[in-house]
Image (cartoon, rainbow, N blue to C red):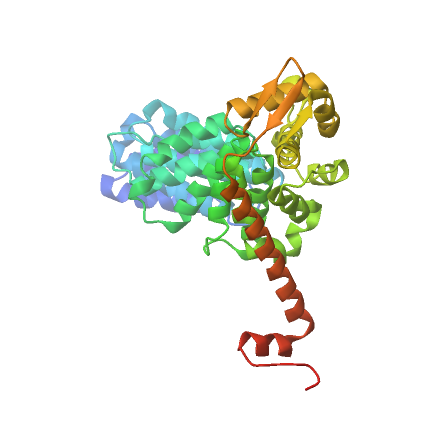
Length: 424
């Protein structure tokens, strides 16, 4: 028997049971070295023996729980700054602890949960997203043997969601987000609420449901709980998703909302990658050029450039549909061949896109397959007139802003209603 085992046996057979936890803790404090002292193989072996001894039936359940709690607290405190090879040793010890407690899961639920969180934190630091998520997934949250608050459950669910999203697993993340959705309404924790909404937006983005994703991102970009730089990054995501959304009335409203957002025009971050330019052209219903599309494509994330049916991308589809909608405002009718040339796709593909948009109510028109023509028409005159008035107002705003930038004093006097004439 090793000397450490002998010390454990001596404490187990000593006096009264109520004094044993104190003796065990004193031994544990001597065994676990504080940083920067190294974790030697002898120390690791002693800790393994301590864990094996702690879960023995002869120790008693009350004492076992106290021993494991002391181990989790003390080992966690003295290893949180460990790095490199020592971090691997820490992982091994935590893993061994889980293996030992697995035989009595119901008895040690609280300690198992704490160890899994600490092990997940190590994996997350190493960017091992899946392993970190697996650790948290093993936490018993639906147990009837202990009282678990909704906020704790919500924190674990959302943490799992964010880890799975880092690994681009939107399907797995959505399953846990749905669990979180059942209890989020009871939470008053503002941080958890923001993280929940952020996860919602990211999952919609990953699932290529770009229109609702754009709406969620735009809503998030106004949350003061989030830092300024992060809010602008979220606003960029909103613009990107709006551009990638299928053309139609709903997207037009989203584009209008974003275009009227002052931050989009004022922040230089939005000018990078041609975001401002492509948003303006889409809002104004102008045809997009190949160079503009290529500049914007360079800013997209991997899931946003995935291939669809017909070997096209989401961006290809969005640009084709937008240009078709723009053509419907310029032409009364157009042949399949001319439409294909305008959209840079074959005539039969142009026909399919037009028929799909008409069928889904995203564009108004008819198709004459005999003459190979598409006929466009507007539902009402007033919406077109309203759009033109809105466009004019935006141009006037631009002129006023230019005047303000060049002649501040003149601008303020005009704004105050004073009669002002230069040179008088």
